[in-house]
Image 1 (spheres, rainbow, N blue to C red):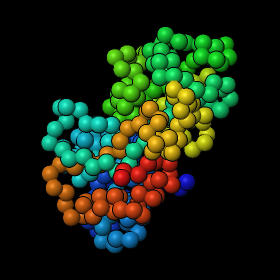
Image 2 (cartoon, rainbow, N blue to C red; image 1 turned 180 degrees about the vertical axis):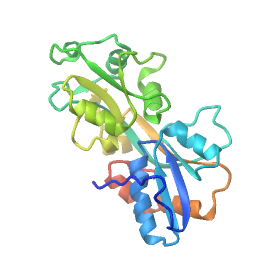
Image 3 (cartoon, one colour; image 1 turned 135 degrees about the vertical axis):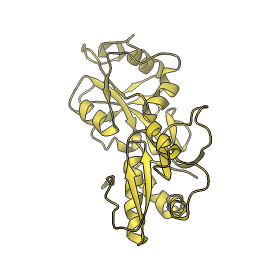
Image 4 (cartoon, rainbow, N blue to C red; image 1 turned 180 degrees about the horizontal axis):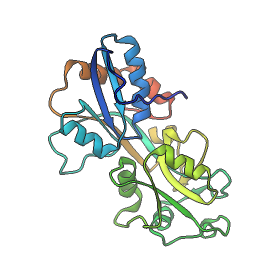
Length: 254
């Protein structure tokens, strides 16, 4: 797949730098687009950093970054920003490839994460305790999962907290009894993505409006972006860039 995440501080000497900071779900996709943009725009350099959706919004508010990356809708108190939808992404509920369970309802997923269901046998699996894997507070993926699945229920404190999609993937990959949730575009075939309410988690089902766990991938700006930042935004929304995102498993913005 060849996704690229560009490191902070590596833009020195590359010309005008545009900092893009935030969601670790959006980060690898923005990184790949930044690499393509940088190759074709000498004198400009887009630098992509993670940190989470909330951190990205703060970076824009503080003037550190020109563009924030966010994988959830903005909260009512997050005012004064403009959001640009660059793609849509499904949230996949994932288990180890060895797990016999193939799907869950949203109610079952909520009961598992709330701690009401603690054994795989209660949802058609083997008689083994479920290991919960969740994302950290401030993660756009977690906040979208809480909104779309948990509702008023809270994720059990026993859940193991990970700070990126990659960390969730590695923990679930290494534990046959684990369950996690992550960006559909980053499952990479290493895990089993469960059906939700009988619908397969695929880009096609997201596009068709059938898969129930879908969230926006946003760029967040404050005020009018500078010329360099706007040029990158325009590139990301262009048909060639949208085709790259679609190839990587996302659903194009338009």
